[in-house]
Image (cartoon, rainbow, N blue to C red):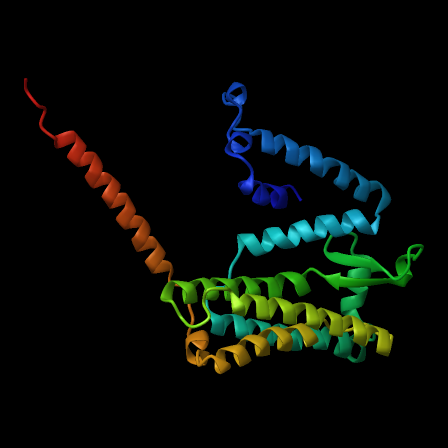
Length: 259
């Protein structure tokens, strides 16, 4: 949760994010660091002592956001292969593991593991543990990596000045279909009264939505071949460093004016 709050604190005024001068000799601590710690402790304590679903969801959401921010998929094809692989993985462990191991392994692990690795939703206010729906963090983080990749693809479209690039239409589309996939998962849960592999609904919703949109705009090949260039970022940084070095050299070698 602390990491998630610190990520959001980047939008705070500069005076809140700068280190406190009096504490610099021990550690670089800013006022925002102190505020984030003070906000985190009560939530963590509430979860530790009560195991309530609300602080669990706060901590789980923070962990998911931090994961999406810390890691990234850089190629569309790799992202698509990963999603398709996890699509079948999720289906097997929810539907097929009972026949192989005699028990639903995915559901058993989710219920027995005591930690903020899932979102919990009570079906009614006084619901007990047996009357709660669960959504694993993998069903948030994995599509989150893909959605973040699509947002960066939108940014590249904007730099190229492509059609309808004024707004991140691919990002909006995949985000809407992600929530539609979640709604479909919950609807299937209510209809069949059995655990559902969320990626069964989320992967087709996310992948097909952007593929259809790209095909309609004539950008299907561009989307399929999209890959972020790390070399470009490194060379750009190197050029900036060289430019700074040249400026410093010019300043050092500039002849002094005589009166």
